[in-house]
Length: 349
Length: 262
Picture 1: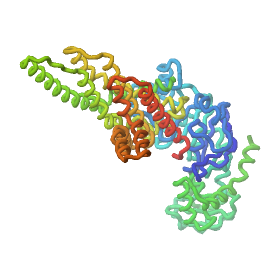
Picture 2: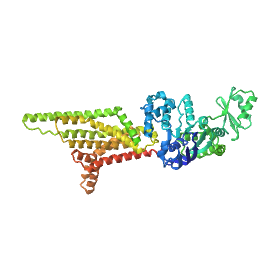
Picture 3: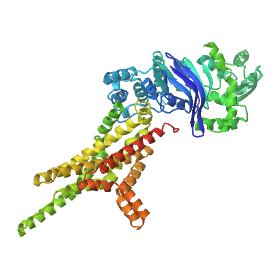
Picture 4: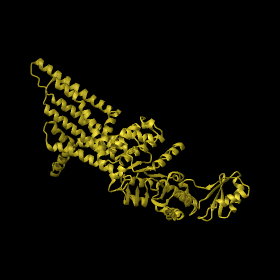
């Protein structure tokens, strides 16, 4: 169980996390979503007892992160981003080392269990240096499981893995979610949708939406630009798409047409499909233009001012974890598009 | 305590697997061995001359041991930073420090575990000079009590220089920078005697006070007392206090990581 209440974390003048609140329940995987630099890692570092909050409260497994840091650390398994490991140690050696610091009994057998759990039973004696990136990720996860913690905090565990490894890891996390409280951060919306029971979305240090992933996805997709691809050349379908009711504008982008809805609350996808089929076009693809969360954020902020400016600005913010005041505009736009989500999602739960 | 011991065990094991540790041991023993041999040869000539001229040869063996220790204490400005430079800087550079800091272990235990490992390695180095001392014991006799205190003094001296160098390993992620600054710090403490005499040379009341203050901060002021066989509580206290204060500062530096971004 994780309870976060008005958590604020500042580094000097820079506010990384600005009063976020959410809970993560036992027996569930809670997805922690947001673009890079949104404050996910900072929040997780507070929750693992690594760094104290500037203001607000957070309890993990019933212990306050500030007042009972040691108890929090005893009950949390943490896999940091980039998975730092001792490359000169063997997998089993590393796990027993972590277990020794944690005071785990029967370390060798616990370490073997943990390694088997992540599918590395046969690689136990290998030096970590010789393991592939995916295997290292799993060694890190096994280390987080050594003491069978109540709470697991995983910071972007799927980043940098190949597609098969990503699938394996997602299955594993889903599985772990049945016995533990899992907080799992990612910036890929579809990933959260696949494995999370609940999702908390943060941007620029604030929670902008939380609820069940499917509902959130629908919410986020609404008002987005629509990507239309047909067997025919985009020039031939442009006028048809443009004529559809609810489409404000359509333009050609490489081999597809991008349709912009005229109302943020409407989804003209069905109407576009109908129009295309009626005109005997062969539709290959019809979807929201954005696939992952970052694209959705870019999509949501598009059009509020001149496109290029805002794109650069937002891209800059995402890269540099957004420090300045200029962001307010983006924030407002992003919020206005999904602002009613929290209430809605809450009422659904 | 659990964490401290785990960190200590891992670090000690690493020392005895690392190339640089053996390189240091090799270089140190090489230098000591050369000078020691030269001294023995010189002493043998002296005693032969003494026998030939019919005079009794009054050969002191303790200065030979003192000289060996003098080589070690002088070289500590290189050895201590080399031993300690990677201890903490590597952990912060590799990011493993972040994992350790989320384990139920205090920053103090972590730092003390690291330090004790370095000190253990130094103790092993110091132990190697027992070869020479043993040889001397075989050919002559000396005041065992004094030699024991010489060893204890050198051991404390080594611990203090290691503790001082460790601070830099916590401050910077760059091992070379840590080593360089460590060397500068240890050398300053080593040369405090000379620095103090600059101040006392001013022939003024304030100059004398400042000079004496600097002298008391210096390593050699207290070490030389132990060498001459005078055991004073204040000298022992100096070394112990230097170690504790340096480790406390290191632990503080490690803790600041919790307040820093990235």
